Image (cartoon, rainbow, N blue to C red; front, side, top):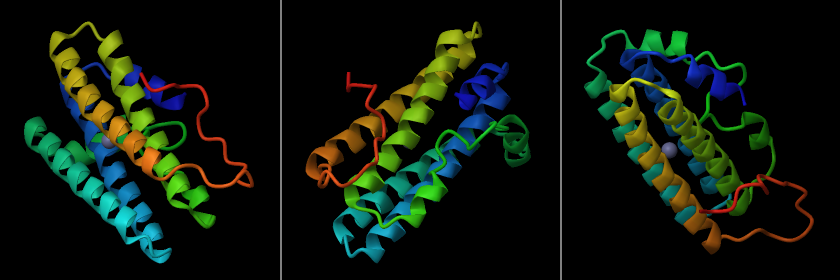
Length: 175
Ligand code: ZN
């Protein structure tokens, strides 16, 4: 996927921080959008979950900014995070046009988290720089937790009736 190329192009810690910063900033936006969707459809429980996730990603984003100690991180992020399509964690905005069930909102969340996880995993497995490897491994652990959380929510909000023709990601079983 396009994010892979961007990930493999990262060769120093500042660029990795900037990419991670952008990923988290996009995740905040995504979860706020999803929370708004769930509020629109009077699912206050799931809206609250998404608000919590938005807060968690905000904290993570701000931690990355602190760790990076890079005043240019936002402009660097825009240079580094030049994905061919969307950023790894950015929600599929086109999908927001549909009336969204909790299940579908969670599919969007899951896709974003999996893309972020994949992004960091590929950095971790391809870099020869131990500092970048260590950072990437930490981000992998964070994103893996988010993926697990969304899976646990999906057990609570299973797929609705057969009429949904939305096929999110049949390929990856939970490991
Ligand atoms: Zn995440």
